[in-house]
Length: 497
Image 1: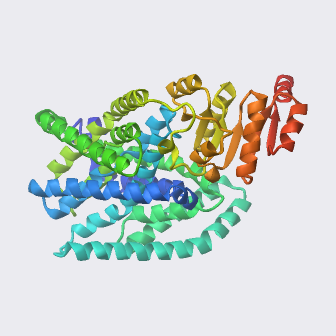
Image 2 (image 1 turned 120 degrees about the vertical axis):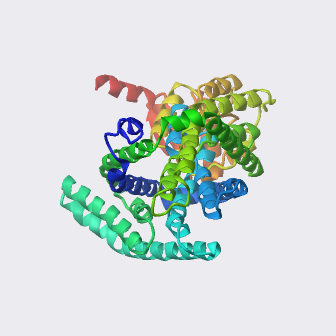
């Protein structure tokens, strides 16, 4: 739409008139990302977020930045290009994972950890763009200065935010006015943005810090609901301004260059991610699938290249910025196909690997934490799994029957072959780090064995069980079940309702 109505299309709108409003789209996007990054979530995935994620961003930035410098671009432009192209598309990757029901698979966990770190990396990159455009001759000093300013800003806003934010939202919530709550939410977002801009940092950085603070309050989801319409509307406007800069004739003239650079970006990022996932001990199938899924450029590249090519900054020329934006666009469009290819390769590798009928593959799930374990694969466990997916709660299914395991995997469930009453298998699925065990096994004898085993070796883990009648429920409670759902009573209540 932007390309059609912009200066290279019918010339109805000039993108310069929309720049200020479009920038607020970025502000609200960073605030929404901050809302997702709770401390609990980061701590549960800290090794993969700060280890794997950091290694991927740093290594990709260095390789792409060095390549850019070698072909004749300035060191400032190379830093921004390397950093921008190191980031993947959060929106597209999460959408693909959701549609494939792969959010709880190992590929989903690897991707989420990487995207969380990339979201963090956006903030220093946004800070760097105006600083690199200055007259400073010492790049190292400029970077150190930027990081120091960012750290000081974060400390000040965190300190004031923790003191004021929760009492403020408590007061506003007591008024029970949706309009007032929305207004205060906007005040928090824009006030934090103004604070960081006054420190010669970006507007987006303040919004990101405000999101982190709000995520630690009980009003996280309510704030998210209030802010989404503004974010969606203003982000739409931002992407329209990006489209207004596209020249169709440039695409036609440089199509082979654009396609070549797109292929180079995808191959480079996929190779780095595959290598790192293997280095971090993940199996080859998951590594290849993750590498292809995360190989595209991301929406933040639009933001960074747009800022870097503005008239007052000029780190990247307008023609180079337009080519790079088209490369990112093409790579994003390829994501579903790349993911499908990665999934097919992973399934082929998995099917050609001999399976062990007695134990769970340890290398597949050693990274699990704060998850739910479902024992038994059947219609009931499928319903439970779908509901957990909606709530974005990580889970795995353990099933002793190999045919059922293969059937579940074909449907996209994170299911593993193993006997859940064996303590070595319980340890293999990181049960000590789990939130709960849900027992959906229909065999009463096996069900009791699983409950006794879990209760004996992991007494603090809640056990939720289905029972066929009330008498059986009382027996299960005696041997350690925490919560019991009697099947016949539940269906009777539903039918009566």
